[in-house]
Length: 257
Image 1 (cartoon, rainbow, N blue to C red):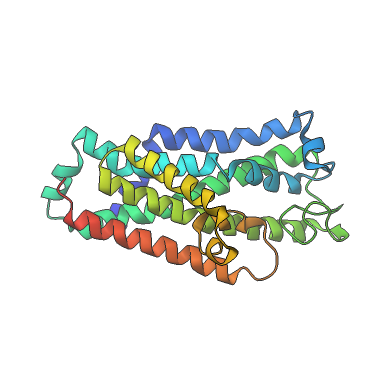
Image 2 (image 1 turned 60 degrees about the vertical axis):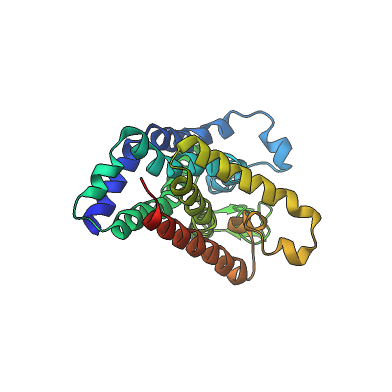
């Protein structure tokens, strides 16, 4: 199983869509240093490099990161179908469940990789502002960017780490959903469009009562910045991930490729 996972991970890093996504996540934070209206839009003045990860997440998490996930995770199935490499693989003495499970594991790790590169790029860009103690907030802790007083570098790191982990978990259902559509459509473009369309339709359901909105996947795409008890939305997102992942495995077992 480990061999299959490593193989799928190498395939992932070989995809142009994945390399482009990682490059954007690494370099885009550099824009915050030269963006003249950033402070006006945030209504604060950035005083520490520890604040840049929250800015990057806030800008990318609603559209670009889901887009990257939708395209790349769909390509994990669609590209192999179009290149004719999936069918020969399944003719070998390899269990179908292991094949799709390895793809699912890598797809669920991909959000963490994107977030790690995005945060690393943000902190590198923030070196000029300093990564020591400062007065204010990281945007990922109590008081958000305003903070609740002075914050040490260690405390800021823990807030950024917490926000990064929550962001990775928050995006896992999107990756699993894209892989599911990849299995259903066996086409990268169709699966990616279906994933993005599903997310946009869910966003439109804001017209429904709050009791319904709390159950929607898209209602929790700000989990990385939430304070207080995040257990309930975290469990809900993990249920979505497990559900989409199970359906992907089930569909792949019965799909004629």
